[in-house]
Length: 379
Image (tube, rainbow, N blue to C red; front, side):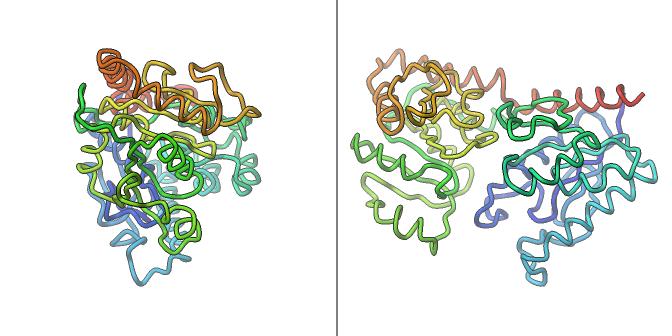
């Protein structure tokens, strides 16, 4: 059945974002995912309208209220960009009131929630952010049943279990864009992500220093922050600890596919770590703390190793028995110590795991099923 779908994205970052389109402190992941869903639905023959900035690129019908993404539009103060997002959201719901859509798929949680009860068209919101922050904790319970919610991991639901969840849909990537390498000539570890305390970069540096293993850091950083200037920068020696900065995607992929392993020692309940599946798609096993979505994404002992972050935070019985930094070190050394044949098999496991569970095709198909499920329930 051909559906009339509104994809309600943001006009803060253009769709899809290139690396230079993503402002400091942002990942661009929600925008990437919404772009992939939009194009996937168009490819399936649905009538899709994308609400985004005027400089966005899409095969859907584009509706915008700003000519450019507001993140880099000088006349728009960064404190004001929310107002333009509300203008975009309001435009979408005005069109919905005119019965132009069968369903609205929103990238927002609280902001679309304010509008969803005002129209007959159902809204489904993909929750891209953690649900334990004070605003979502106070606002979303008021709209627990006025829109549907899609979590991006089961772990994400825990702070607000009462919301009307219809499905957990894991993010998917284009595996054809991620070059798989079953053998590598390098022996470095890799970290990709924003260089902020939550990402656990300090722990990664300690592991590299304790084990004398080379570590490459890729990602944006606020170079005036105390975290960077006092806690991270002094460790950058460009021999053992190497910072590459924020580099284009094809260069990141080169480092993914040639890394011995990917370090993900997160310090928070990350809803979904897209970098984990990007690394595994290239064949690179992941060593990560058992927080957030990690136990749902990594197959312990097969595509990497999961580590409990402390003796007081045991989330599973993993192959690695030590916890914290010692556990990370043990897991890292396991990968360096395994035979060449076993390491090759682990890399094949990584690729196969992503191809089975985390592809664009699987993600888009699951969203299409959710749309149909919601509309069937409405009847």
